[in-house]
Image (tube, rainbow, N blue to C red; front, side):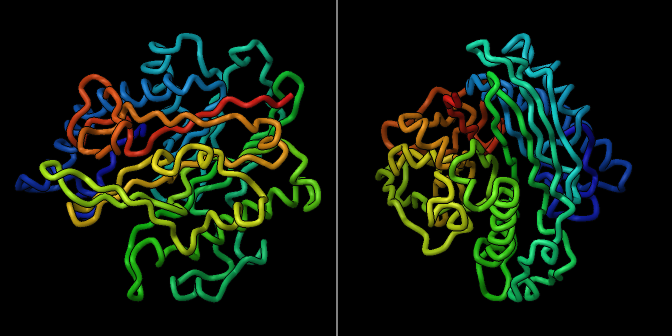
Length: 357
């Protein structure tokens, strides 16, 4: 982020928990305290985020929750450059639909580590598309107060077309609706499921419109991002004294089904063992704890077949100490990692090396 967020003064849900410990007289005092808190917290967090990105060893980065180009430049020059040197000179971001100003973005090197030139071809935002335009309005959305004329993506589906060593590949970078907010007797995930299902259908429609329904399986494309949903999770019970129990649970419904049920795309992370696919630790206390995959690289059938042995890496060194790792998966944390914070992120980066020749 490139700016301070003072919305917590009027909305306690946005207020950092450390400021809730103090009696704050007025908005002016709140702004001073929030500025001090944010600045004090930012440096360690940015260092860990940069370390996690460096550990991906990626030539192309697909990012979520980016404020703007200035923030991205400041982060790369001030933090990432110190760890990777000459790095990601090409950056692409378009303002999306999120009211907080968090957007998706892409950063790229000029060439791969193998020396193949990465050539930018084109970029397209799909943030403007509505439910009605794509004919994806489901009446169940009306129960959430959503109307057909509204924009379908809560952020964007940012399309980036490049050539690597002369070979074309398209990236579709997403950040789907969060699972927050119980409604109509449903938990946050199920209450917001129709929105994510519509977003997933929209991404699929965009790809099918681009390549033709019969052509999608034969083209090189990836869908990357935080989908805020999972098909399976690892439920955690027990405690540190008596030992933890990890149980894999498959969900009956997921927005990911739009991509995966009929072989439209492959979730490359599913090539890892079922207990080792998680990218996020979720907890609301000892009675609600699980590990799950929220962060995805979905490959077209053509790319998937060409890279049948490619297994993604999940960088977990930036996880806070409160994260409960299944047996044998614990990693060395980055220096100065806290119990809950500072941390690189609550999400873990996912990286994969692909041959697109």
